[in-house]
Structure formats: structure tokens, C-alpha cells
Length: 223
Image (tube, rainbow, N blue to C red; front, side):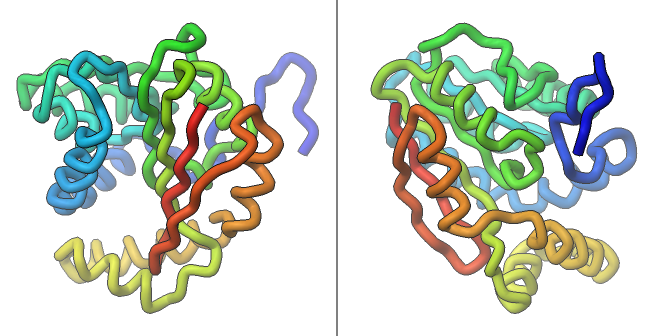
């Protein structure tokens, strides 16, 4: 798609997560808090106290907040949605933890080079309009030896895996239907394993480790 002179490309090609849509999303994903806590524990096991962590597209901030509860890490969250930045900041204040949430573009991170020890991006990478640019920016802001973890849906996820995942959320009938419909639509722009390998090869990371799961996969990167 051609961008008019003087206009920047949209940083996020998914549905706009602002206002009531962001509030609905925050309400429903909050019901999966056990999943966020388990992932936070897995990440914390790889960190040292004082490490700098960046979550890209943290949404309502649940993962970053759960990680902040586990130790004295320096955590930042960057999201393209101003609604999510507000919601996440309010959630962190209520939890009495310190996380610096700010608005920004994954392909133009507003951070200096070589500053983060760990980067995580969960359930959002498929929506970035410049995924290779986002990967290059992750590499730039990681310190040498730093690691990144991308968790996202896979293009070949089955309808059953979507149904099973939504069932784990214990949503009401209407919210469950809307969530299944949303995930089915998102699957169309998700990446395959081969897509991820090709994108990573086009960046300074060069290679990645991919662990496949029924609904998605985890992509591990090291600078």
C-alpha cells in the first residue's frame, strides 16, 4: 500500500484498541490472570534482580504487573493504544507496583540502544504493520546477550484449538462467542513458522528458536 507523502504508516494493522473496545478487552483478558502469573514466573526465572525488561504491546498491563510483583526489576511497557497506556498505568497503581507504561510504535522504539535485558511481546506481533522493523528495533535496544520472547498465534491453528483456548477463559456466552470470532479473524493474519524464520533471518538476530503449541508458538531470540 502506498503511503501519501508526509504521512506515516499505521503502526498497528489490527482493530483499533481504544475506548470501549480497549475496556472490553481488558475485562475479558483479566479473567486469564493465572496465565499471566504463570508466564511472569517463567520470565522471572530467567532474570536477575535489577534487570531492565520491556513488554511491547502490554495491553492492560497484566503481565508486566505480575512480573513487577515478583522482584525489583525495572519494567517498561510500550503500547500504540493510549487507552491501554491509561488502563495499564491505573492497574499498576492499584497493584502498588512500579511499571513505566508509555505510548509508542514497536518499529520505532523510544529507547536508547543496548539497554534492556529482556523483551517480551505477547499476542500482538501479528498486528504490527512493520514486523521486520519491530524485530530490528528489539535487537537494537537489547543489550549484548539480552533475550526476547514473542508469543503469538500460528496461522495453521485449528478451530478446535481456538475453542479450547476460549473455554479456558471462563467467559459468558456472548463474550465467548465474540472472542472466538475475533481469534478466528486474527488467525488470517498470523504467521507460520516459516514466516517467522524468514523475518528473523532478515534482521541482526539471524536465527530464532521456535516452540510450537496448539494455538500458537513461542519465538526465542538472543542478541
